Every structure is written in C-alpha cells, then in structure tokens.
Amino acid sequence: MSKIVGIENMSTDLINAEIRRGARFVTFDYCFSIIVMTFRRSSDVYFIRANESTFKHSLSFTLLTLFLGWWGIPWGPIYSLSSLFTNLRGGRDVTQAVLAGA
Image (tube, rainbow, N blue to C red; front, side, top):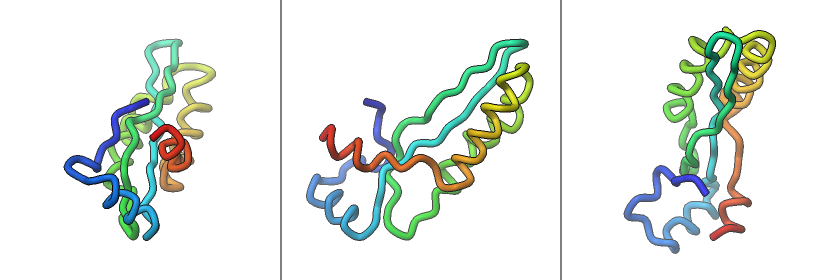
C-alpha cells in the first residue's frame, strides 16, 4: 500500500472519528509523456478531513499532467483527460480500500 499523507501523529481513534465526520482517503492521478511513451500513475494516499478541499493536494498532479501529459501519441491526450477529470472531481476515493487493509 502507498504511503498515507496527512495522518502523521494521529491515533487510530482520531482517524476513525474524522472518518465518521466525513473525512476520506483519496488518491490523485497524473500522467507524463516522453516522446511516444506515456505513463499514468496514482499519487500516494491523502487523508482529507471533513470539509477540507482537495484542491491544494491535487494541484501539483494536475499541473504535471497539464504540462507533461499530452505529448505521447495516442495515449497522452487520453490519459491526460482522464487524469484531469479525476483530479478536478476531487480525486479517487479509496477510503473503503484503506479501511479494509487496516
């Protein structure tokens, strides 16, 4: 499993309390292209507290995709649009998978 960003120094009880209030675990997609090869990846898992925006966490992945994702043909544009769509919708909620693995 990936590293979880944002739970440093938090107890399991505190994490569970935050989840009951609406917190979630999220990953962001990004892609980059090198000549004719395109790579699509997911970020580490981020802990997003209730009422916290994902924007500040997704920004670097979104910008990476905007500048470096498009150049590989044909998958660059396809993966870039998919990654941007995921990130602009708040990322991929992986809360159930994280909790199942805990």
